[in-house]
Amino acid sequence: MAKPFLSIERLTQQFPDGAGGTLTVFENSTFGVEKGEFVCILGHSGCGKSTIMNILAGLAEPTSGVVKMDGKHVSGPSLDRGVVFQNYSLLPWLSALKNVTFGVKARYPGWSKDKVEAHAKEYLAMVGLDGEVINRKPSQLSGGMRQRVSIARAFANQPKLLLLDEPFGALDALTRGTIQDELIKVWSQTEQTVFMITHDIDEAILLADRILLMTNGPFARVAESVEITIPRPRNRTEIVEHPNYYAIRNHLVQFLGQRSKELAGQQSHGDDQSPESVVIDKTATPPEAQSEPATLRAVSNE
Ligand SMILES: Nc1ncnc2c1ncn2[C@@H]1O[C@H](COP(=O)(O)OP(=O)(O)O)[C@@H](O)[C@H]1O
Ligand SMILES: [Mg+2]
Image (cartoon, rainbow, N blue to C red):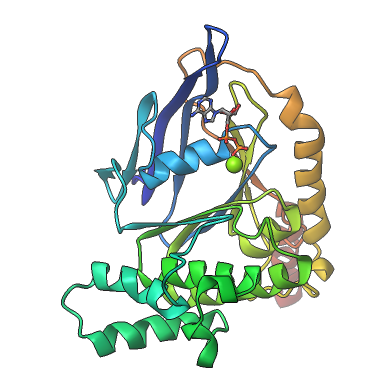
């Protein structure tokens, strides 16, 4: 099978445990992300989500294993990978607009000043920021607006991969909802690949093509890859009506509430730890039902 766009191969991370021993966060973790996919990773606090993200971003080196993007080893930070953290600090002395143009200039050194500015404004507008507000400094913006600027900045650089580490964790529910919608809008208009950490199940179902479920640590692993079989565009009030919504939600709740603990602490014994694929689809026609109409048609034709 062809390698996925982003390929995580036998990734292992160990840290000193502070008591003279070794903490194995995860071991031989192996999974992939396809180009243009929106993948969310869900797991309890401390299981190793941020550690994986920092490795994907090139901000940390794993103990062993490799990450490949487009077939090339990821090592060190790069403009090909954009990162948004929960409290990602904007440059406080620059306006919202300049915070975005700053990165665009570095990414596209050949562009004219006007082109850079128009591009930055386009991305700010996609997250609902236009007019006078884009000339304000971060201290003059609300938390939600600051996070919008962070998202616009990350997308405006047009990285091949966007990494989001609980980007909405510090926001109130209403602001969170608006920015989730804006994030989906930017993602669908730009066809970028997104890997996002969240611990909000409903957020993950709304946003993701696929959810990776992580067991608790130590020896955590990505145990399942759950496909979100709800068509897009998705709307938060309508998706709850979809026949797959509660079936998927219950599966996720059950995993996080119970199986993430039961499966914790399992060592790999040298094997690749790849997730099991889970497809929950109540709208799919079971195989027996599929063959029936064909038989009936045959009878009626005779
Ligand atoms: N630099 C480090 N040194 C030692 N232990 C670390 C370091 N970074 C993370 N850890 C430990 O690794 C585990 C996973 O952390 P983290 O990736 O931040 O989890 P999550 O993002 O899922 O909450 C935790 O037990 C944490 O204490
Ligand atoms: Mg974290």
